[in-house]
Length: 265
Figure 1: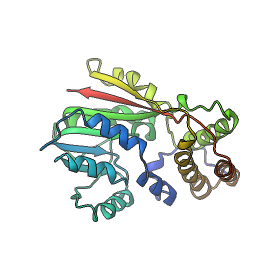
Figure 2: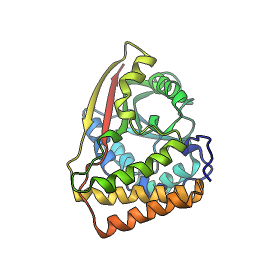
Figure 3: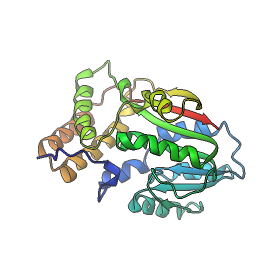
Figure 4: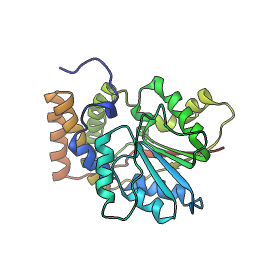
């Protein structure tokens, strides 16, 4: 039986191992982040990565641009995975464990603040405060990236993608995840500050079977969450069935777009 109480996923006692592995293997979101940061001269700058996760590739990119990279996450295990990954790269580790709603930094301490898929994963009544915090500690530019699941489609096999969406939303609903956060930036920004100077960029991918490995990574994370955290055997079985079907017969589909907000201060 699933508890009716909504919880924030990333404040759970333990994150499924599949989710940590998935975060390590994220490729396309890194490409989007690197594309955005390539518009800035990072030499000698400080970059705060709020909700950094365990993927070291973005850290390597920032360090390679002669900037100081500071990853922040609420999870000690996530930061530990990043520290371990960075030990072989030569990138110094300045990880900070903290809540996105209360950043332990002074006003304007970082030249650039980067935040990816955080707002969608925290409770709705926390998003305004989290926004205010990144704006407070950022000196010049704040970059926010969020998914918009409205764009998840497949012309080849819409039914299996719809099954994936419906099952994923059962997870999202239990953890207050907002799958359409990318299309809600303007609404949130109006609530935070009517005078925010921002622009939006939409990163969309073509429909392709090459996107399937990423989808299966997501399914494995959802499967373990349903099985080990929610204790929902029926939902776990559905995720396992989807994994087996897609591994056997991959389909072309369009992943959710990433919407990037660039805020200039």
